[in-house]
View 1 (cartoon, helix red, strand yellow):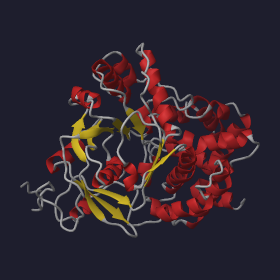
View 2: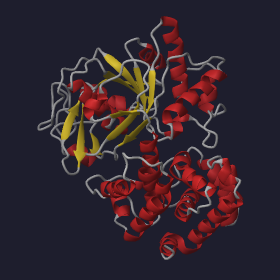
View 3: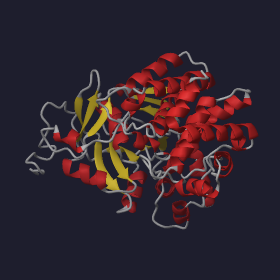
View 4: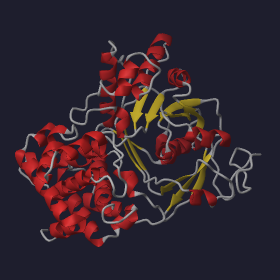
Length: 484
């Protein structure tokens, strides 16, 4: 038995936490039907939980081989615990449960061939991904692969893979050579049409290598939703055992998956997943409403002195602003759907955000804005502009983001963003808010071409940034609210 610091035993198959619900099945760590790329907290609170439920319902053989693409931290947390960990749901009806669906935790840079071998195993039928938006190495403007990105260039040159495309292409080669059959590659990241986007980017990579994706490989769209803040030392201290993989989350969870698989799959419906013909209505609502609200709260809230989502959503003026941005501008862009009541959805989102038992850091949400905002805000603005409609709230929030990346001394800064050097260079190279806004819109690579081509949108964004700069966040917020 391993004794951790403080005298508590380390969680393992022989040392379980008191009062925690155990998996409802007998683990078989020798059988894994899924490889997951991006073994972070969200996966452990979401896909791994749905898979745990499927296995508890009798769907054996779907254990997960989890792969960290960068750091050994998660492997070092899970492997000494027999890959067991506790998921603690916080909120009304919350509970704690032990998750046993992860069988192995690999670190890709340490042993890339082992990862490729797992992906090429004929017993593996599904690859899931939570690699965040920047893991796709996509040009936000064109949605094509950035073939000149450093890691992509490295992989195309034949080095040990560093990107998801390098690993998937190597697995494709081996599976085709051995007759292992096609894979379902299921993106679980917050990107529009994420499956088709992933398939297109993989095709771009394969074309650059001089080959094509064989028939039968599938990349379904999916939509995922669960709030998973970072776990703290205080969270871990409350358990009767030392659990380095403890994962905190809300009680709510949602997974909507397009019914387009290349072969067998787990019965995720046992955990409440929805298998549907078209994910897009769910996806757009989530991206433009929930994710859009998160980003607005982050870029306004940090500058207003808030650190967490629940604090920002309790700022009365900010709450009115965000609700207006969603209901007046984002909701009208959603396609009609009998499965979605937009006003009820917005109300539910804001209730979920107001959960002090789930301290979700705004600085965490503010990361990688250049990769998130095209689908959360910019598509909405461009679609409304094409119909002759203005989007002043979205433009005000965009101005708050531009100010965020330009202010390198405030909370959450310097900006953690793959395009931070480019965005900061724009600030350094221009003197007025109007010039900065136009340069960001036309030269940053973040904005769609239709936005940069619109003199009116660029001017309105410049005016929003000028007002925010002159009045400060609180003054700009009050000035906006006086107009609605």
